[in-house]
Image (tube, rainbow, N blue to C red):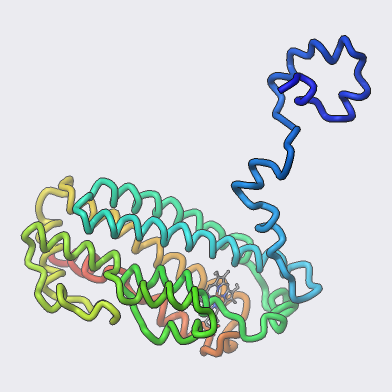
Length: 295
Ligand code: HEM
């Protein structure tokens, strides 16, 4: 590539020939000359990403509501990817790869949770300025959030119903419904390592919500009563970090909702805050919490 290629076309035209021939700093400047779209665009698709903001109202505050929701969808996508990686690794007894993916997801959950900041102080007046433009649209209809919940063991066939009209989304969700969750894979691994995971847990209907088991609680209590630096106890703590951060997302959502709309009904048709309160109290990986009383 010629040295001139590093200059802007205007600079190149205005400079005398001798100056153009010896610009030492030119080699340090980024390349400006590409035949088609930039390699950055080809990889990131920023042009697509930054033109996905189809606003429904004239309210200037709607943009950050929409973009925050889109940013969260992207984080959900990354986190699903990490948990699927972790589940696959556990299936092949590769705990280090599983833990690395889970640890990445912990940082990502923290970033996800921080992205509440722009909406955390939304007032009812501000939210009302564009709320009616959302129609019946609600985060409840987020398929990627549902995949996160399925991976955590919170399965429900009825959550597929809203997606009947979107074949790809429906197929992905249906596959996830019937696959072992991340927690199922953890318990299968514990069983292979000789821990007494009961048959009804091992052979459970994977498409149903995971129900806590006293025997599984006893296994975690045993693991936590032993060497805390052991591989399985550390896996338990990593999963507990994940569980806590999911719980925090739910609670931050609940508080933002309470601030923005009090006890009005949701755009998705639920009782709103009262419904979210019930959802937010659910424990992720339940026995990892209850076992602590027995250590
Ligand atoms: C502060 C603004 C927000 C308010 C007032 C709000 C309100 C609500 C309400 C009332 C529900 C219950 C279902 C319904 O009837 O609609 C809900 C569910 C939900 N929202 Fe939001 N939301 C807000 C922001 C967000 C954002 C930015 C996301 C990110 C994707 C999101 C994701 C969800 C999800 C995933 C559910 C389903 C939760 C579950 O199934 O347990 N929400 N929201």
